[in-house]
Image (cartoon, rainbow, N blue to C red; front, side, top):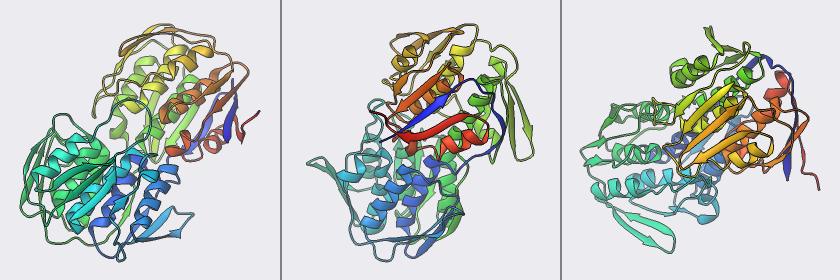
Length: 422
């Protein structure tokens, strides 16, 4: 098993290009199941989660070929789809596998999808997905750990989500695209990845309005067409490199970003004392002198993203004074705290609130990643720690960051991937 070894103390400098967004790629690849024919997707990130979605779709009878590996391009032909099962062996590793549920029921009238897994960061039930599909006429049963859904044809419905759910909104948008009549999804998730999926569905011939707002309307059509589309850049990967520049007192141009997707992250970086300036093709981040403490409360978009909480906790360890971070999205997303404490961080957790006192003198240690974003936080901590840090279980990291060690080396970091030591 691989691990990442970092020797800290270097100022990051240079340019880094951001890969396609994992959380946009997964629903967009799943949306190919809505149409017969061959769709072409560009800027697809090389990630374990994307490979899981690829294997899931291939297992249903589709064919996928890399049209241009260097350009991150995939061609998906769905003509042969005849198996409507999403097995436990694949779904257990990635919660987003449930995104095939809506397309399969909408186009083929049935689906059998294992209840999902993924990072152990708290309960993430799919009840909102199922409630919405039932409202559209699907018959839902839970059998031996699987969701079994059937419908002759879905019909439009008025759906009110109890909470904003990104994958739930996406699943219901895809299902509604082929339903008979008009559907409305209220209290919908507003994340940029949801807006992007709406854009993709409309390119396929759907009639989606309001994607990226709290109310989405979808007028169903009889059939959809395959398309060509380039995946948007990953705002969380971009934010991670921006924090890396700030904490190492570096000077990094983060290229291929959509600045408005990062407003909340940029605001907190500036509050902490980092310099963030827009430039053609990206955002430049400079770490200037001592960092100031920050207060953060995670919120659905356009608020501060929960997927950046762990990275900003590392930033807080570098700031002089007391920072407070409150996690409102997931109830078990502080598992990185004990690993940061092993490196010398002063963090006290009380329920969903953590208090970080800095600056802490971090020292290299052997630490264990517990989930995707925790992995990134430990990499960041290693960049500013004295001595050598060894991050274990980096398979979590590979779910959402494409070759992060290579990109960091390109900025001057002393980081490498090696086989785990005995």
